[in-house]
Image (cartoon, rainbow, N blue to C red; front, side, top):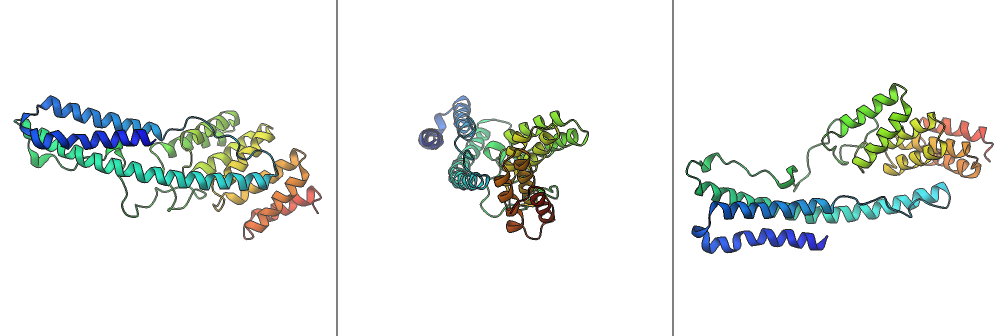
Length: 280
């Protein structure tokens, strides 16, 4: 990451260097070539943010609650790393945008019919505004989506979620499970992630795939442990652990519903499930 960032900064820093002393000697092609170099470096930075595979070693082994704690710790570590990378990328984007704005101004000076007054503001590199102050509220979300202070939805995220939910509502559970799986891979950590994992678990449960359904409920709870869907996800996780014969873990997990969310409607259902399992 450091090499790509340094390359992007170096490419951006090179732009005004020779041009400040030899601007009159530059041609239109020279400046356009420099613009191309900057955009190539920005694309390299964007690739740095792409995932290369699923992480391993998290949530494996131990009781359900131990796996939950392990996943929570990993999420905190990844969140911290993501914030650090976001700051560094935003710094490069801001500087690169300013430099490209300068190049556009100078390109206009070289073109005979260009009106500098009509240039307007330079669009931010990557098409995403860099926030220097608290940003606007997230777009309207469904009742169990993340709060307004959480991550904002990407373009097409709501539409993809709605398509997967429509398949689920129509009883196409296999299609819905795959669609929600694709959704969570495409929009990891988004405001609808917890819902997507939960509905994927519901679709898998309808097909009798209790093991994978339990994992989906665990991922739903881990995605937003204080969100509106968390009590239901924890309840369904406990129920599926019971169905899988892991009675002790199921009892502990179901007890956590009341301990963590005493005001939730899921508490009564968790107690009923504990009674069916003859939990102590």
